[in-house]
Image (cartoon, rainbow, N blue to C red; front, side, top):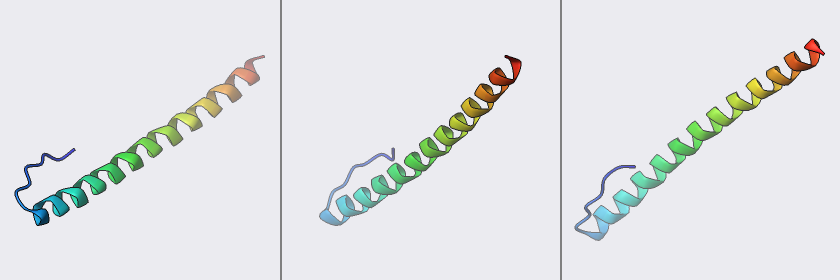
Length: 52
């Protein structure tokens, strides 16, 4: 998360926008990792089934 030291309401508003943007980027990264892990889990299950 970006650092913050607002001195005016305008600074605070800008900081809020930066924080929202950082949270959106973080959420996209989490979603990407989750999707990747889900695909790996499906592949592992399919591989395990083929061995049985």
